Amino acid sequence: MITQYNALASAPLKTGSSFVRPTQSLPEHVKLSNPATDVMPI
Image (cartoon, rainbow, N blue to C red):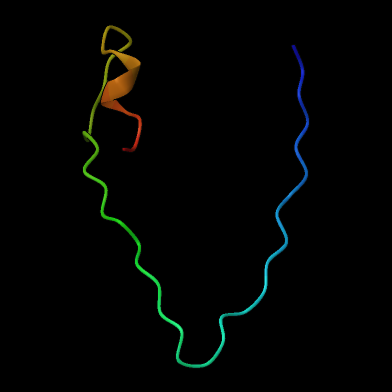
């Protein structure tokens, strides 16, 4: 199943706007035996 998505339009933030970038705590090393959820951001 191949699905193509269009890129979202972007625009500069207006003066006085703010944003928050959540922190991520991902492991430094993973193995193939680790579950995928170990490396997926929440």
